Length: 296
Image (cartoon, rainbow, N blue to C red; front, side, top):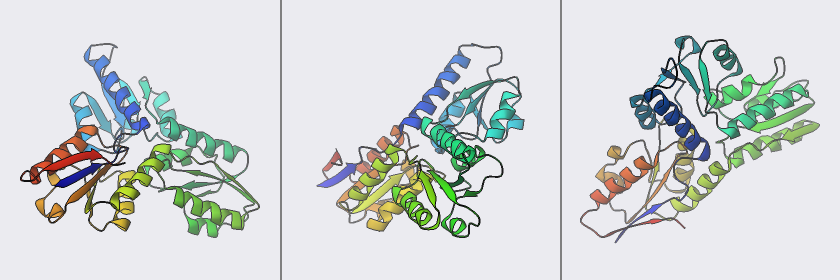
């Protein structure tokens, strides 16, 4: 008998569910004709999942790359947040702002701002080019040193005290590495663990699941940092780990000789993609009895 084990914490986290719900409600209100100008813009994709973003586009939520592309209607601030300068620019326009920033991201922005105002150099544990990290950094007061890598931290000069925050989807191990390095170098270190609980739960569960199956699948957008990290974690334990964005990417050779398959998904992966993948996997194993259950 073939077995498919699905992670209980796979898929949308709280912040993503909230952002999608806000975007869909905004689109529905526009469809009903509420408001004088109902064109809806999203400054950057609402979440990092192309399929979900495409569905929102079909409902009238149009992704733009810059504030300059928005001149009327409504502007949705994505779950990752936007930079402080972009927000001020939006506020200066005659448009309606709909804030879908994840509350956990907003809290990280707040901590970074407060630390900088209290004179702390600020460490942001995360990918400097990720939109969430850019938004967090933008709230740090001008002139305050900002570090996003261990090498930058090691090269810091004239810094006595540092405050640490993290991109909400970072691993606890990476945050701990920065804390360890900082406490060895600076007289005062203040830490805010801004990693979302859903990230910790999802990564811990994926670690256990990957070690119990013959083949492991991580579902989610290729542009999703937390999904890529999940795939990295699983691959360290199970070499037969595949990061797949859409169900149709599953090929027979990926499960050849496997008696069991594990399935998890990033925080921005819709449930319909998870369900579609499981159905497609069952089709590949249609000649055999297949059991689908949640990983315990």
